[in-house]
Length: 99
Image (tube, rainbow, N blue to C red; front, top):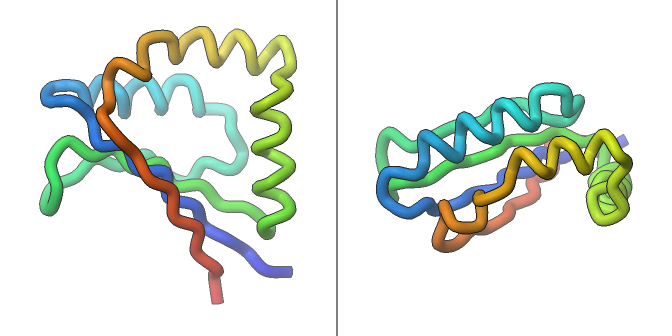
């Protein structure tokens, strides 16, 4: 089995990174894949990085499918993310294979 680590990085608008991190922490609290939510201390400013762990690319793809077809419980969590799109300017995703 190949484990992967996913970094979803959001470059937030000034003053929004801490708010976005708190929002993620609340909404993602019960997500079994979530490892950490981090904000930058050095490098590019205003970044929030959400770190997730999966048992492989297929497990990550399955989680993405569930996100696209959310359960009622997921819809309630997603409602808490209302306004997030206005908090960030851009973002990236990196997927790493764990050796």
